Image (cartoon, rainbow, N blue to C red; front, side, top):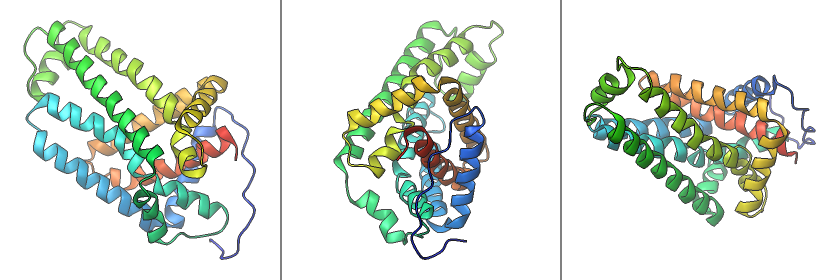
Amino acid sequence: MVVSHRQPMSEPAPITITSPLHWLALGWRDLWAHPVPGLLHGALIALFGGALLLLAHERFWLLAGAFSGFLIVAPILATGLYAVSRALAVGRRLPLREVLDVWRSRDPRLVRFGLLLALAGTGWVLTSAGLITLAAPAPVEKPVDFLRVVVLAPQAGLFEVWLLQGALLAAPVFASTVVALPMLVDQPVPVHQAVGASWRAVANHPAVLVLWALLLAVITALAMLLALVGLVVVIPWLAHASWHAYRDLAGR
């Protein structure tokens, strides 16, 4: 139960290979300690994803571009939930108005960072399209074409190369954001300093953060398979968990 008086924030926990599971547990606790802001964020993001799916479901590259941007922008849209976890750590429940103030502040650092992430997503779609266009034995225009020509192709290789390409492009994006996004909400630091802190965290704890990245990807993929409804809970859960990851990886 959250109490009304302020309490000292706990010290960051030591990093071990089980830390990602600990962050998920703390994120789940925070979500249900103050569920309204998180579920509202999750519902809005899920509705936005559903609209993208409805508009682009028959055009594979438009759908791929829309969802690449969606997955990259979703953590930016959930940044207000870091403030919720920060407040819960000192015994406060933020009113919804204060949570939404993170959006309304139009923090130029978050805007610039969001634009950089959007460029990264665009780069992924363009390189992916180039690979499939050059290497696929038949044109890929619809999602069913991608499934038939690439995923279920009798000759192995193209799908595996496509996955490897995606992993190589996603890795620097993850390394640049894992600490940076919550740090930009928590501290008045410039973007380059927050990104540097992210890369240092990855360099110091590579195995732990590879596991963390895999957990984030698998949980998000499962939520999207549930007709995006799972995102209503998963988006705020992972946002709260990411705050606790930041707290342990970067300290106060």
